[in-house]
Image (cartoon, rainbow, N blue to C red):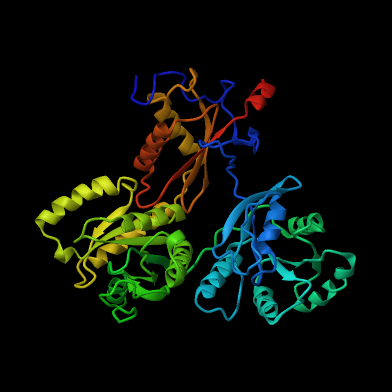
Length: 480
């Protein structure tokens, strides 16, 4: 008997009547938390427009439920938020964005960056315009940007509550984005027709994640005054970022192309995060949004931690943000020139206790001030990105999984032992695996499989996500 469960049925074998090809599985299913999941990525629709034209109201109408926050005052939505949606049997993701202002300053500039990022990563764009106001200078500026995009655009003329108001819609042809479609997000008028149009332009499958084709993007993240700007300056060989002993000098992300290890990298120095985004205000909230956006636009993050001081809650908060973003990760313990033997002993204990969530993260001890060991960041970044991009062939994955489960079966659940019928890697960046099973797998067993997966396929420096999809019992009975 193993520590993970009693010996029972092995992994279903091909030809024994239980092994299933992935094509047999329906899209219905639940993950380990009881939420619907699917191994197949779905297309993304970005809802964009200037403030207070009814974007969030339209999102709620598309979803058929009240999810997005709606207020009469403009600018309530600041960050972009994603929701799962479906129409006429097709699944897609809706992204609600903050108001887009081409000449935005301060906080509005961060909101504009969020909307722009959503447009860059979407498979279709819905530009929401207030039909009672008509096309403003803002919409015309947005239209100029969207006309250059290869992504299909649908113009939603909102607040058309009557046939009389439809006469105003024709003026929106002037945007040069095709036919404007009248809709009343508040009352539902024309919503079904708009969704039909969206599905017509939406591809069946999402486009591939954009390959940068140039320098790999690296986000420097960490709490204030940990040395992010000093490291960027050392790597760039110039005073690219403002450095001051006062914490919080950097507010906007600062980009720099850096030649390192024979390759060109694009580093982004971000603002230090003091507190939770929900409790931040003013420029701190603005900085947190820009930092999150920079992180999501990056491929790998270097989390800087001040090795001379104890690991803090702020450090762990930034770590959580990196984990949630799904980016590859390198942890750089900075100010190593200030660390003595006693501090090294304490730091080892802190790492075991505070960083237990990321034993897979590559670690480098550096000094941004003196330049100590900064060149060691290159192999750490290369290795983390290699893991982040890695794909395991389905046959090899399932052969390995059969051996692991034969040696250590999953624990019983409700007196029955779940069987893993099939496994596939659904995505890279980060590597995401889906296990098709006859029952739930305990969290401890999933962690065991993740550890073994990392050992076998060397996923150092990258998060690995494992989803479990349980075959519907009614479907099992039908197939019998």
